[in-house]
Amino acid sequence: MNKIRLAYLPISFLCTFSSLVFAAPIGNENLLLSQAFINCDNSAQGIIEQAACLKDEEERQDKQLNSIYKKLQSHLNATQKTKLVASQRIWLQLRQSDAGLETTLYGQSQPDNLQILLNDIQRTAARTAQLQRYLILLQ
View (tube, rainbow, N blue to C red):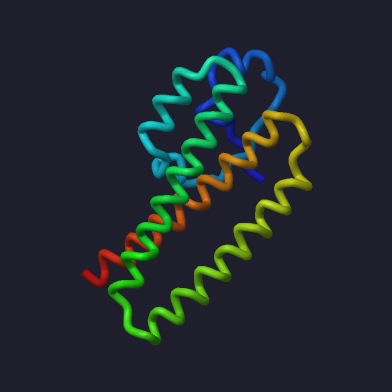
């Protein structure tokens, strides 16, 4: 598995935990994170502030996903809505399964927990982008 360092951790945090290598999803998931998160993360002074930034981003991404999902539903006929609901349920199961796997792969430290949360936020952001593409297709 390819591993990359978590780009958003403060330098002081990386120095403290320099032996850790964070495995983040490969791709453009980081591009889907909000500017508010990037700004918060860049100014975070330690792991507690980092965790607060992640929690805020998690809430922001969940709200955005729900908003796009509802907008997409409003453009669909009954058959398409049924397919969307089924697809979303399967995605939620996959998301939960991936989180369960990561819980066994990563340790139980605070940095590990933050990485797991970041991975979940990136999954949510990627799903939002996917639903957004469907919405654009229908408009």
